[in-house]
Image (cartoon, rainbow, N blue to C red; front, side, top):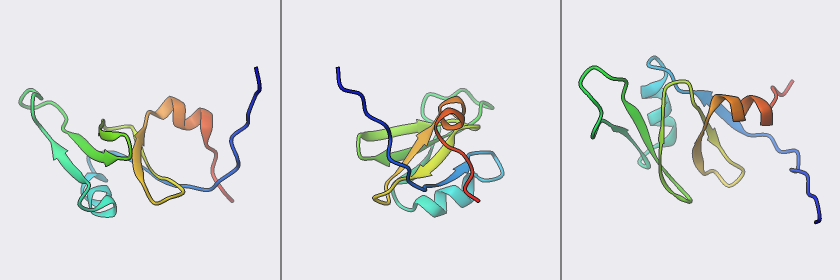
Amino acid sequence: MPKFRKKPVEIEARELTPESLRGIKQWIGTSARIHTEGIPLGAPVKLAIGTLEGVMLADFGDFIIRGVQGEFYPCKPDIFEATYEPVQ
């Protein structure tokens, strides 16, 4: 089976926290909305993001990535840490 390696690309990413929620929502623009449907009262909200694959929900602690084509999507912290490193 052939093997492939990810090309090295630089991306922009921000961690979704209660403090960064509004700023990230503004950064993403109209394809993001605060999602509260089905979430119990008092539970953390989620951020619904329109992605190339459809709407994805981001939890606090997830990273929001702007990809190479300007698209946005959430990434779980463990996957983010295994895949990306800071750029100097």
